[in-house]
Length: 70
Image 1 (cartoon, one colour):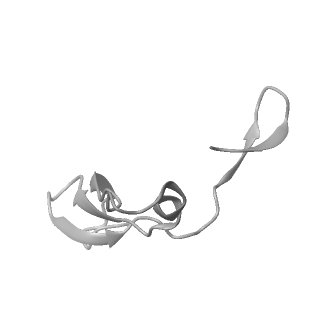
Image 2 (cartoon, helix red, strand yellow):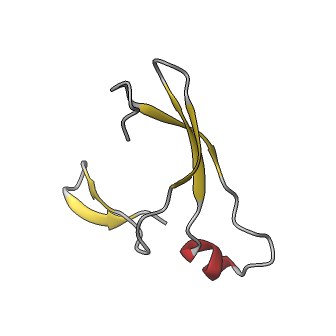
C-alpha cells in the first residue's frame, strides 16, 4: 500500500480473531489492520490484512521445493 504522499504504509497493528472461533475458523477469518505512513505519519485504520483463504506457498531455498507455511 502507498500513502497519498507516495511513501509506503507500514502495518502497525493487526486485528486478533475473536476468541470464540474454532482454530479452523480463525485461519479463515479476514483480519483488519492499522497502517501508518513512514513519511508523513498519517494513520489509516481498519484496512484489509488477509486477502486470501489459502496459505501462501513458498519455495524452500535449500531444497528448491515448494512448501506450505503452517
